[in-house]
Image (tube, rainbow, N blue to C red):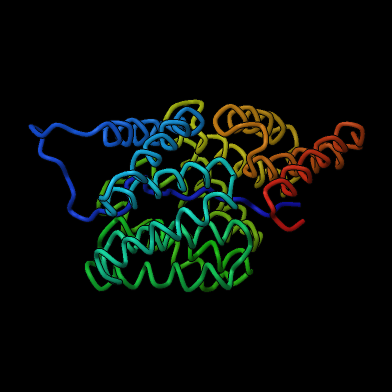
Length: 315
């Protein structure tokens, strides 16, 4: 019934080329916009941030500072990605990556962040052959610099998700566990970023029918996600994933309200056509089909197919 869909953390300010502006220096308008974009992104307000990121990039295109241009490219790409505009995000990420490699070299931490971002974009498009080398390279750069750096956690988790999507659970599980360990060591057990990794690890257990191991991870994931606010997109993901484990156990009465709330939260946060809605729609439709409520299931499946087609994802 379920192929769990995971959101991954994507850093907005991803180049990290040592360009911090002293507090007393006057910032240009594009930098002010970038800061607003970052705050909105961190709050999950991607739709509100999008026009500001586009405006900042337009200003950067007219200026000679390539490093700041790369930063604005990544900011916009991260928003477009999270809003499901994959075809728009890809060339932006590629341009940002080329700039970072040119200015900072192939082993820079900013390069590692962009490799993670682009690799995750490929993963959600099921382009696993493209995603795997990007994510492996991102992890390798971080490992060489500092194997305990929590900034490598997204790439570890995303690479694990590539393997999980391919049913290579023996490779996925240790990557998820390492991602959790790195984050917990650096930021403690209650950091909201752990929510995504917990969901990903639980997915490997669900697909191996180890539901007793998945459920407590998903409850913890939901608790941590709710620290970001009740309408954050990560809350929708956590609700969906907890509902999925109930669906596998045919606990329909437990699953249905979670799925309805997941759809409402995700649509409010990301828009009505975001690909993150697809698996939630399919899960709720599957529940209705199991209960013989075919008239309620059909429009949900039709909507899910339309969203996938619009996003250019294989059906």
